[in-house]
Structures are given as C-alpha cells and as structure tokens.
Length: 120
Image (cartoon, rainbow, N blue to C red; front, side, top):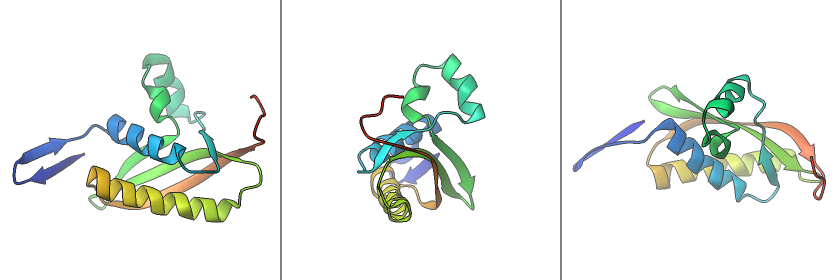
C-alpha cells in the first residue's frame, strides 16, 4: 500500500500493516488469539519467522481502499456481536488515524472460543 503526501510517497508493506493491525486487535479485551489455520498461512509459517506476528490477518484491495479479514479466537463469556463491532470500529479508526489508509471493509471471523486458563 502506498500513500502520497506533499513530501513524497510512503510505501507500507502488507506484512507491516498486518502486524500493526494484529497488535491493535490483541489489546482489545475479549480477544484471546488469532487463528493461523488459514491454508495460505500454513506455508507462510514454514517459510518466514515474522508470519506469526501477523497470522490471522488477511488484507486485500477493495475499491482503492483496504479490506481486512480478521480470524480470531475469543474468550468464553464475551458477547460476540458486540465484540466484533468494537473490533471493527477500533481497527477502522486505527488504520485511518495511525496508518493513514481507509479501510472500507473489516470482517471479523470468530474461529473459536477459549476458556481463560485453558492451555491449548
């Protein structure tokens, strides 16, 4: 992704953006982890060490804006619809204000529920 400013162009790699988004989502109460069972992530995890930091985050272009798919695991007892809406609002604001890119679509896919203290 690239942004143009009066000082020149700024190019941000998709990996960098995904890592930033993942770190933002990890701070949200109720999110336990990301799911890394996406088929494309299995091969990436074998090849690159940094893939773990951005696992569960998929980026794509949508109408000259950013589209984001988040594959998360939530803690037991959270209200999933409210958590998903909160994640969408938080990520949309973060991406716009911190990274400077418009996110047109943010999809939250809950892949599982984990009881806190459960080691899996």
